[in-house]
Length: 203
Image (cartoon, rainbow, N blue to C red):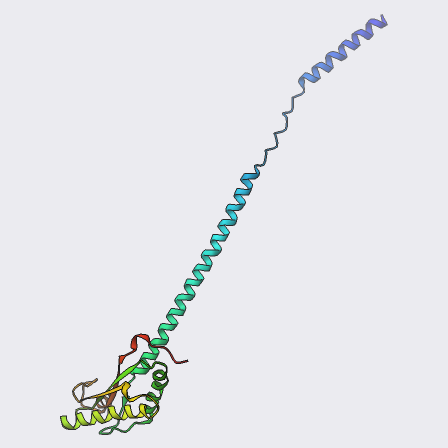
């Protein structure tokens, strides 16, 4: 009787254990670890490095172009200033060919440019206001142009580099019959007749 009870207990235990195992859910296996493709990684790293290199090169090119443009603009401004100084007129008092302090200063500014640019040649045109006869004003304009030339040649500029001409009262720069107009018309004008295409600023 005791043996039979033990057998029955063992069978019941086995059944219970089997039922518990059947009720337990199966856990899914862990996902496989993905394989790392070293070639892809290297290719991505190379692409990133190439992109950074191209970006750096583009930045350098942009800076170089900007610097070149700035240098070109600065040089153009300097050349424009040189040309403006070289062609700046000088003005005279009424019925006079004497050089004022302002006229001498304007002529002095031309000398270093002429010394630096030996191929430059100028024409100085003398002008007068409309008071006085045509003959008088033509002669006065000639004396004014000659005075400007003489000032430059006495300071080392070769005479062969400067031509003179007179227009008298024929080419006023300002119309009018008062001192504001007359003072602008009593002048010596400077024209570059050779060497103006390759001006160099004085150092």
